[in-house]
Image (tube, rainbow, N blue to C red; front, side, top):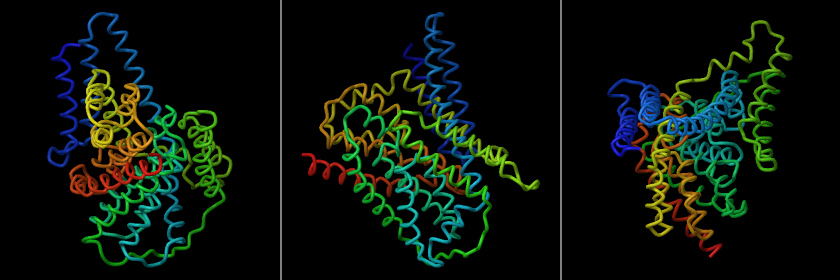
Length: 418
C-alpha cells in the first residue's frame, strides 16, 4: 500500500477522533463522524488496493473485521435488551433501595458504586457491568456534576475489576490463554485494582458533599419479572462457565439467554396491555452501537495498514516495566484487544510480574479517555452531560489513579513472584 494512502487513512482516523472531541462545538453526533470516516477508510482501501488479487485479500480482511464487529454488536444487543427490561421495570433501582440505607453521604455512595462496579465486572463482561451499574447510579437523586463524577468512577472501576479474572476482560483472557499467567496469579490484580479505584474516589471527593436519600418505594414484581432476572444472571454465570470449560464464545451463550427471555415473555405474559418482551429490543440506543461500529472500523483499518506494528516495535525498544505502562496509555487511543493481540504476536520475553503488569496496563489504561474502552463509550451514551470533553476534565485524576494502581501491581507481583 502506498505511503501516501496510509497517510490519508491515518488522517481519517485523526479527523474521526477530532469529531468526537469537538462534538459539542460542531454539533455533529459522534456516531455519525466515526461511522463516516470508518466506512470511508475501508472504501478508499478497496478502491486503491490494486488488482483482483489485492482486492480479494482486502475482502478477506474486511470480512474478518466485520465478523469481530458483528460478534460485539450481537453481544451488546443481547445485553442491552436485558438491561432495558430491568431498567424499565425498575428492578435494579428497587433492589438497590432495599439494600442501601435510606440516607447516606454522597461520598459513601461513590465508594459503594465503585465497589459494586468492580465486583460485578469480575464475574461478567465490562459492558454488562457498566450498564447495570449506571442503572444503579440513576436510582439516586444527585446533581449533574456528581453524576458525571460517578460515571467516570464507574468506567475506571469496571475496567479495573475486569483485569482480575478471565471473565472480566477480553485482554485478560487473551493473556491467560497464551499461557503467560494463571488464574491465581490474576486474582492478585484485585489488590492494585482496589487501590487505584479508592485513589480515584478520594481524588474526586473535593466538591462532593451532602447526603443522598432513596425512597423506599414498595414495588411489586410479577413472576415473569423474576424469571427474566433469573435468566439474566444465569446467562452471565453460564457465559463464564461455558467459556472456561468449553471455550464457547460469550455471544452465543447470551443469544441463547435472550431467546429464553423471549420465550418467557411469550408464555408468561398474561396482561394484554403489557408491552411484549420483543419490543424491548427497540429501546436499545442504536447510537451506541453505531459509535462502536465506526470506532472498530477505524481500529481495524489501523491494524491492517500496520500502524499497530509500529507500537510493537516501539515496545521492544523499552524496558518491560516502562513499556507495559505506556501500552496502557496507548490503549486509551487504540482498542486494547488488537493492541494486546499485536503484542502477543511479537512474543516478548517477560517474567510473570511483567505479564501481570501488562494485563493491568492494557485493561485499565483505556479509562483515561471516554473512547478508550467499551465502558466509556456506553457511559457517554447513557449519562446526560458526559461528553468527551466532560470526561477529559477528569483524565488527570484517572491518570494518577492508573499510575498508582500500576505501581502497586508491578511491585506486588515482583514481591510475590520474584
